[in-house]
Structures are given as C-alpha cells and as structure tokens.
Image (cartoon, rainbow, N blue to C red; front, side):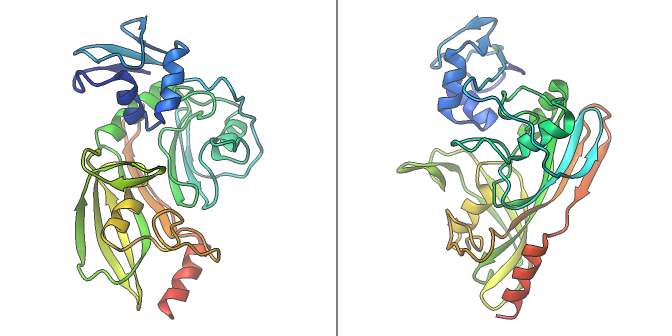
Length: 295
C-alpha cells in the first residue's frame, strides 16, 4: 500500500498508521522496526514526524504466525476476481489475534480463494479491508487484490462506503431520530475498551427508532465514521447500551450481542459500478426480538 501525506503533517508515523489502518501501535511499531514500512524509500523510526508529500509504503507482516487455510462454510453474497462480500455469523472472529489463530473468517477465506487475497494488512489479515466484532453479525467487504484493497481503504477513510446496522438497545429511546457526534479513543485505564473522550477521533453515529418495546428499543444506525466499537460506545454513552454487549452493557450467556451489520453500499473498486447488499437478521436475533416484544 502506498500512502501520500497531504494532511497529518508533523504526526508520528506509528500514530498515523495505527489510526489509518485501525491496528495496534505495537503491531505497527514492530513492522516499522522490521523494515516493512518505508518513507520516501527509506527505513525510519516509529517516531518519525510526517512531512507534506511524504510517500509511505506499507507491507505489514506478522512473522510469528503462518495462517492456515480452513474449510469453513462461508455465506458469500458476491464474488468476482477483485472482491467478495461475505455475511459473517455472530461468534466468528474476523482475523486471528490474542492467541486465537484458528476458526476465523480469514482462515476460511484463505481456503475458499486458494490464497488469492490481498496481503497489504499482513499474513494474518489476508483480504481484510475492515472488521466487525466477533459477536456482531453481518456484511463485510473482502479484497482479493492489493489494488482493490487500497481503493476500498481510501473509500472507507473518505466516507464513500455506506453502512447500516440494526441494534437492540436497553431502555426506551423517546426521540424518533438522533445524531451522536462524540470523539472516541482508547480508555485510559483499560486498553481493551474504547470510550468517548476529549482528544479522541471524531465519531458520528446517526440512529432511527424502528420499534419500541417495554424495556428496549430496536434501532437502525448509520455510520458516518468507522471507529472501533463505535455504535457500542456511542449507545452506551447515551445510556442505551446494546443488549448483551459484554464490554459496554449487561451481558447474558443466553444470547449473543444484539448488533447486525445489515447493509453495505459501495462503488466497485475496479468496475466502478455502485453495488449494495442487504443481509437479513439471524434467527438468533429474531428469536430474541420475540422475547423482548413479549416481555
């Protein structure tokens, strides 16, 4: 991946890349140390301050792990030589991490495509352009080529890709529509969790009430930005956490997190045609909805 600096002047290289690629600082720092990132053709340190028109070349690698293709059934909505659109079930991890290197969407994609996936994000993230959480179900864009990957990454960054989510949240939201514009960053005393905080990256979530129950509300969320855990953090911030959210709400072992990525719309990176896909709610989600309707 090649990145040309027009903004972010004087920002640290490691900070810029971790934010742009939505990766951990430690992962980015290790890749910079290993020479997998260059600036204007030169290997630099993590603290290098970016200059106007710098050209960054990125080829992230995870040397510790070799991902194994696994024959796991995929729900594929679209596929051609450049991209796939996949419907991920709740409970499936998108790519390996934290010692979990089996049973992920990435393992399944490697098997399905015989390894023909983009490698911009390294050996354990083949084809992965963006992510949804393990317990979130729904649609994901996957790239087979580096060219398609880079174009899609830029489209995500520049808000050209449209996404809609369905969520069941705690409590009754009185407003029919709303807009949450609150910056998100990592929580100071808990690096796993995100939080609304001063100095965080701008995050905007629009929501619309679909149905109200006795003690919960079914909503549609439209993202203007794509921060980690954005919908989950924002809904908790306004005191309507997502039902069964293990980090930001009250978790029950009876059912999974009630968040579904049901729509994605984008311009095909190569064909330049607008495409859109809708994914129905999982049976698990529908069954829980019935429980809340009758409670």
